[in-house]
Image (cartoon, rainbow, N blue to C red; front, side, top):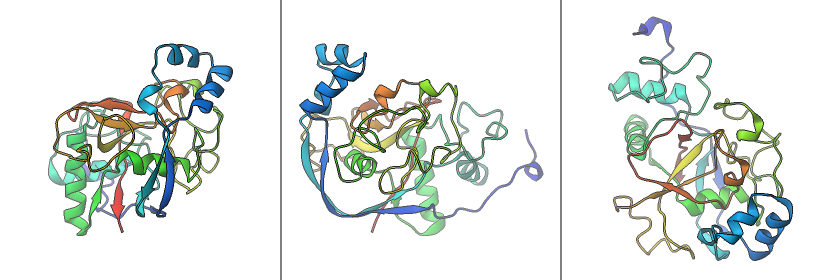
Length: 262
């Protein structure tokens, strides 16, 4: 076990939050965007032929209430303070009781949705705050910035703007390493690649309706994860891509970021 004297344990602190304004946003992928992908991306033909884009359709308008989203995912250093001060279980990928050397500012991974909620409950108690996981609609609106772009920076993939398998990093990178070139129009970082991110939304078909039970955080089923990761191709890092996992699932490619009501 690494002694406390060798590790910096920070007090709970408020993350850097970015205002996502109220307004009408577009979520989902259009037929014309699918056609664009089929013309320009080798993988897209198989997706089209197997109807794999259907989970992202129809593209539709959604009225979003203003909220705040963390600029970055929760980091190893932030999560370590929670571990040290509460005795909560350590993520699988850590070495003993500590994250790997040099990765304090990397996003924490190996956390289930249960673990993410435990961290959020602890942080809210420490700071008398009301942080939470974002809904998938909030996540997508923040990533696209008010238009229909497929990636936070635009319509076409750019391997120099994010950490996907094409980058050859073979692991997570420090949060914000691809900033500002990979940022969303609102200035939110790492919304394509690096790590998948938990949302509080159950995976259900579109159109998105927050009143149809998909925002029942205690409901059974799979929850939406967003953003792609270092381990996967850029095809899954699109802002419209919807993957899912059970609440107790964890992975070295899955983390989370915080949201907050105004």
